[in-house]
Image: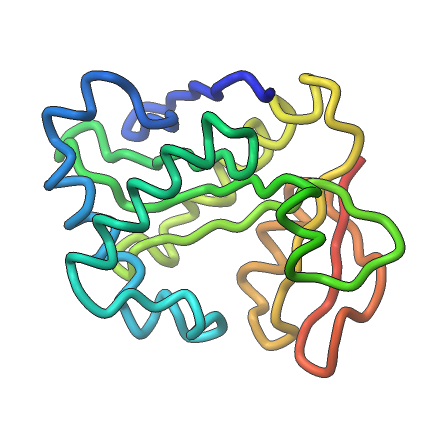
Length: 179
């Protein structure tokens, strides 16, 4: 089981779901809905779209259970001044990846999402490298990421976090890895 990641910058706090977050569960669901229903955020990953607050609520509940089951390790990117989730980082276990991908080997996979209002503010450029280091320092030997070739910004964020191109994944996406 992966240890929770806690990381802070001047304005941001990266954290898993905490007991005190129960008091703001509805707000978190709303923040997640705002992120995963935004056309700009989902430009390259439309399959992640949430259509209503009920789906966001179910998504959050499922991610909490998956975290404690060792399947997915969702972390929130919270703007400290607004006490609002502006993004998500999800570390997906090899066990879950096997259900979705056909690969010879299965590393952990990382996905990240930012609300459109935070895109272009270098949030992921700033926080992804230390988050990835924290994951690797826990003994996870490799982390993969699947990126749409047209998503130049996400590719640059990954490269900044020391990910390198590994292989073509399919006709639209490439596989990147860091060790």
